[in-house]
Amino acid sequence: MVKKRAQTDSALLTALLCFIFLACLPMRGQTVSLELRTSTGRAEFHVGEVILVDLLFVSDTPNAYERNRGISFPERDPMPDTFLVQPREGWADPLGEYRKALFRAEHSGRFPMSGSIFSARHVLGPKPYVLSLILNDYVRFSRPGRYVLQVQDSGVTSLTTQPGVMPTQLAITSKPLELVILPADLQWQQNNLRETLDTLAQLQQVIDSHARSYRASLNDSCINLRAM
Image (tube, rainbow, N blue to C red; front, side, top):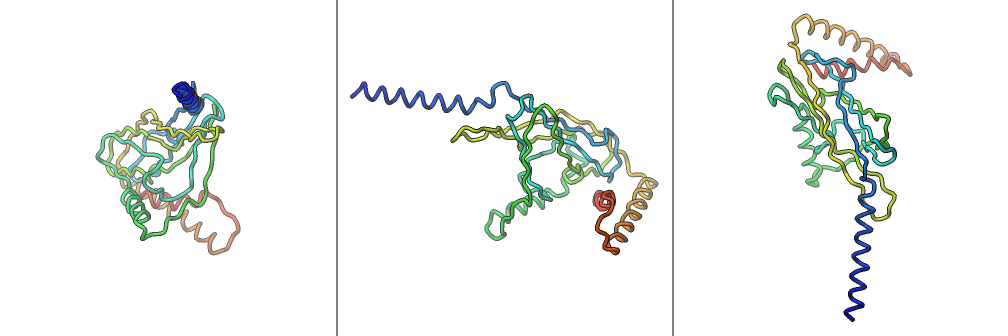
């Protein structure tokens, strides 16, 4: 009886070790890096200017990790990307309170939960996968100065084909990105507002004419106005 029990315990131990080995297999010698950069390569922007940033994901081993992202605006709390900014003054998350209120409402049962309208799966590899964001939707600068930004991402998971093995979620932090925020002087504000209003007028003409297509850049006027 003792011998049979020992054999059973040994078999269970072997099965457990195999499970741990299979669970850790996708992680061996495989890393994912994240780079944060501005889309234009610029480092200086005015207060109220649109700042486009790119998140570049690279895996040194193909078909080991994926970055899942559902399209939703504004993103719900908690977000897959968290921006860390130093100093802590001179900026704010313009949609932070809205995201938190939406999260509380959806999980209180008084507000119907709705998923993203589209979910994309991007398998990572040596070629960078670029995720573009409008920084102003996460960090809105209100004071000139020098700022250092990093992004913490939790949207990368390991790929596994083993039955019963749950994907591993990674927490990745980018290297720092330094930005210089300049004062929004009167001349810059007037020029930016005039160009934005001109583009909005063109967009209105396109809408009134019921055109089937138009230049995508006309939509940028709405983003510029939101940032100002």
